[in-house]
Image 1 (cartoon, rainbow, N blue to C red):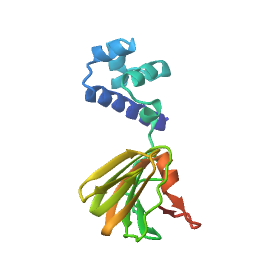
Image 2 (image 1 turned 180 degrees about the vertical axis):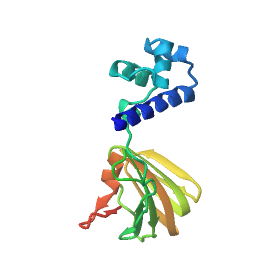
Image 3 (image 1 turned 135 degrees about the vertical axis):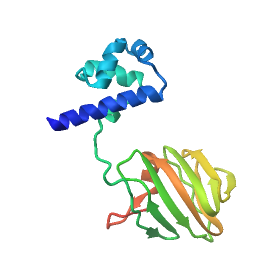
Image 4 (image 1 turned 90 degrees about the vertical axis):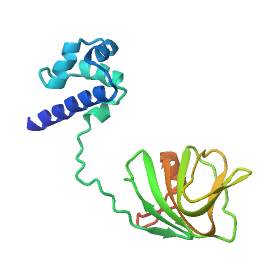
Length: 193
């Protein structure tokens, strides 16, 4: 029973915090949900039981999924300890958990004598150059991305990237489609790019 009370308290805190973050008064949120301001106040303060018929309109009005409101997984281990994985001229470090919807990777590229083969896949890619220079081949275009610059592009355009004039380090962020295209798993289970 204590666990259920803990979940309810987390949900109440999230509801109040979201309402305040969005700058909504109880009256404004009530107008968006067809609930009374006193009902919302009683839910937030714990004087009313949380039920789906109240939680659903609140989540919709606060622009959040029920999953996000009800997620009470522990954040005990928030630190990710990336391990390098090398494949060819690339070394990668996974910077996010493999279960997320967005993947973050640090990559170190060594220059290669031949031009990388352009590929396409569903999704969207983004990268930031930490050090060095990266040539982004995007269809017929060749774009030089310098240290401190970022590139963002739809991945249905043929694309490839490579280090220019020396090694380059970058941070990449992509969605699940991008992960399937960019991250490959070795027999030992470690991801490579």
